[in-house]
Length: 262
Image 1 (cartoon, rainbow, N blue to C red):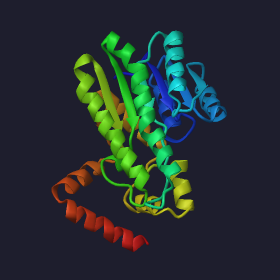
Image 2: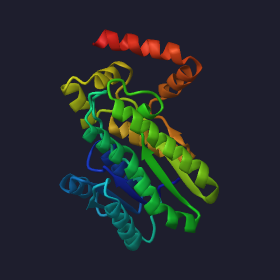
Image 3: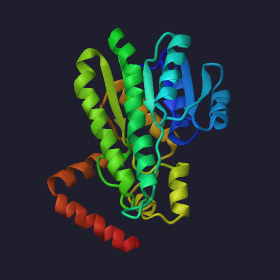
Image 4: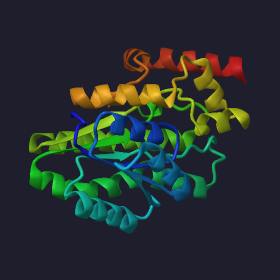
């Protein structure tokens, strides 16, 4: 996808990867960028910093009616949505001790919000025979988020859902991409490190921690190539191959890393 003159909607757009995507899409010549977030004041600050092509919208991605209303409003204002980025996500930092409410929130934000987005935008995209869905899924969706069971399970589900959509709708003109970065310098990682979460410490010890702008750059390249898996950390592909070829050895290596950091 060439972003020039495109209409893009980004959920979780108030900070981190979402705000970097919004800025980069505008710099690439997008006609309109909708920055949607639960924190509408921060979303508005991002949109104001970008300029007239951007506007902010309040959005709870776990509320399907709000997602449908956001899509309908964008289509009414701009005539279409070319690119919908389901970027909002949450981490828990817990294992079996995670409460049911944490599992439910992770499921609703990391998975169901993607379902709601697809339900809302696909009809018009299919009618036009073109469109692109971008899901921020995390490297945890193809590997494992050590120390965070809900995050691991829901990000795997997010990648699986994205793959299903791609297989089902690509021949009808709709492209789907799963953005799977590893360590990114976002508030989510910073909070995890501050709270001593094992998963955050493993990420910090496992390789380069990219800036959100670097992730946005990789995303633009992946969209241009219409890649399904967008891996800002190229080593994730190597990890995934090693995991598939020798799952026992891969798990053994992770256990050693966990012991070293515990």
